[in-house]
Image (cartoon, helix red, strand yellow):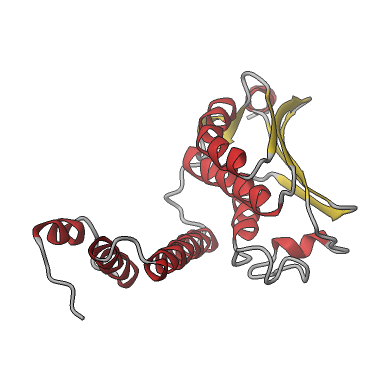
Length: 231
């Protein structure tokens, strides 16, 4: 039947922008509230969230493809702070899955780039590790010479002879397909952000270990470079 539009229902709808997914989500909330949490509405909510993430990632990829001239890549990005701030929300998820989380971040890890994009990169990396992890996740940010090295690793039921394929858009490993939720977009977004910041990325997926190593020139080495350049 039709769910009557009550005052609380109007308030829920008022908080959503009128795009297809947000309208579906808002109406789903109304039905869920009316019938006290149906399994069906919870399933719809889960799928809407997945689609929203996928669309957000596709939108970001599109912007990166266009090499948006408005993207400021000259900020002093504090990777130490971003990493520490990012991890807190994920701790609850790790605990709920009984995942042991090992975290190490050097002090004063700065790179030149865009804070918002690097924050999204970190979030996507952790989310990706969480999807595949069986019992543990290692997360490290270290100063290594002239570089800041970001590394995630975790155990996983995955074997990929050509790890670079994991950076391709919509690519899903045969073992992951059907077992692990995802669209195959997250790591391709990470890859584009790394390229935009002139960094490097290396993946490995073998012997039940999945790892990602990203390197950026650290802020201090870049400042020294500009100081010695003859003009």
